[in-house]
Length: 457
Ligand code: SAH
Ligand code: SF4
Image 1: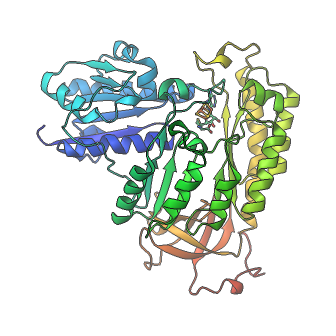
Image 2: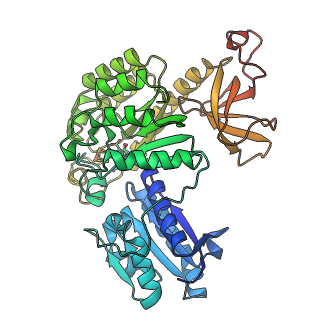
Image 3: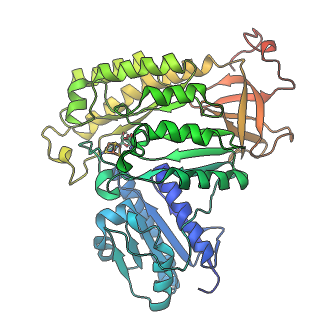
């Protein structure tokens, strides 16, 4: 293809972010340069999500916005990829004829060839389902967007079929990448200067099972931890049913494995968990949390929760509130249940009215905010290594970064640190969703611990 400008847009989870980097990698091999904004691009790849209706609405809004861009210069190319493309396929082209290509979730390796073909023949296409063979136009590799974090998918798909969730239908069955491929990608990322490796999968704890391997995730973590030059290793998402003690042990003994666990509970009620097909009870989950605390007493714990699942009673919701109170999560990502047609829960009786879902959201969010603030306040005065991510979007004089536990920290830039450095930051202010601090002049944490002079402003 002759040189062109491209833009990618991403909706949804980190896996979707990572997929968009793979589209960008192939676009660059085809002669593309990232445009300053999508308005200036010749090719736009919109990588979509369909996990909740709200995501779909946003995407349809954006597709509408792109109509003028496309009609102004019909030689421009609009390609819709990702989960919504897989789910709606041809319907997208019918609904918005200014789209050129609709490519489902299995078409990432063939993306470059399909795009080049379209540039040559201008034949609109929809390809969902099984992967089509990739030509030799380019290789499938990521053009990473972050300067610090390298997203590394370790597996694709999901076998769990939680009754509310569309993911297994649009992403297919679990397929793990061989450990050697993952390690090669990690080594390359480190060579390219990335400090943080984020391993991605819908259910990382079942990594390797489709290849007949047991405990493969624990072994993978240990192996990534051995790669010279890796500063931090994170992963998501863990399914509580498949989380093993071996994984916790490896993290506890690790050198660069962050003590941060995202363990989506979805509900604190055993009867609800059963209707959700999660495969564990409230008691199982609490026992697992006790294990996490035993191996990793300082770990940051986060979770996902759905409120207003069909038939959720006041008692069941109260069980979720009490579980959140009991576990004391650092953060909960709370979602209003969204009906996804084709999933079992869409046909369940007693769908709750939106008003009720919102009321429960407010109650739970209020509780979680109090807990988050309280836990963040306990960090006041601590001196922590923070991985510098770059200047704040709102204020160039302020740097942002993350603690080992993945908490966001903001502090005045002194010019001493650059992106990717581990800065020592003294926490001086705690807010609900973030911490503020100052660079420490020395590394004597005892000077600051329990320093009565440090007050919350
Ligand atoms: N594989 C991951 C998460 C995938 S989706 C896991 O199992 O944890 C991310 C989150 O979206 C889920 O944890 C769930 O809380 C939420 N979610 C999924 N389907 C949903 C739906 N239909 N309505 C509302 N939230 C949903
Ligand atoms: Fe969806 Fe459940 Fe699979 Fe997560 S584990 S992606 S919530 S089906």
